[in-house]
Amino acid sequence: MKNLPLKIILLLFLSYPVQSQTVLGKWENTNEQGKVNSIIHIYEKENKVFGKVDRIMKEEDRDRVCTKCEGDLKNEPIEGMELMKGLEKDGDEYVGGTIVDPKSGKEYRCKIWLDDDNPDVLKVRGYISLFYRTKKWRRAK
Image (cartoon, rainbow, N blue to C red; front, side, top):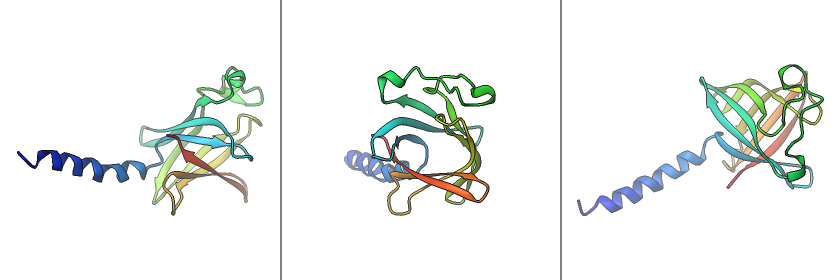
């Protein structure tokens, strides 16, 4: 019984790195200048990974809708939008899903993975054919 506080502290200490080694959680999406545009919440649903816009940082942009999106996302509010859909775990990556760019309305094939050197950096890659672009998102505090 006298070692119980030590065991609790040890358990908490050992569980922290495991939690930070996941793609799940909130991530800062930045622009080219490094300024945070939005917070994206990545979560699991039915054994697949999804991401939605949790918060747009500029208050005046929070009521914007996706005028260039197609289908169900057409004219939907960007804040709260599920823009990343259907990713499945494949080794250290999540693949096979799609991501929408609310500015252009374009949908891309997508994969995400944690940076090898820093688990607080998420790499997000969108594909069209053989062309791709990779962005780095930082874990939100």
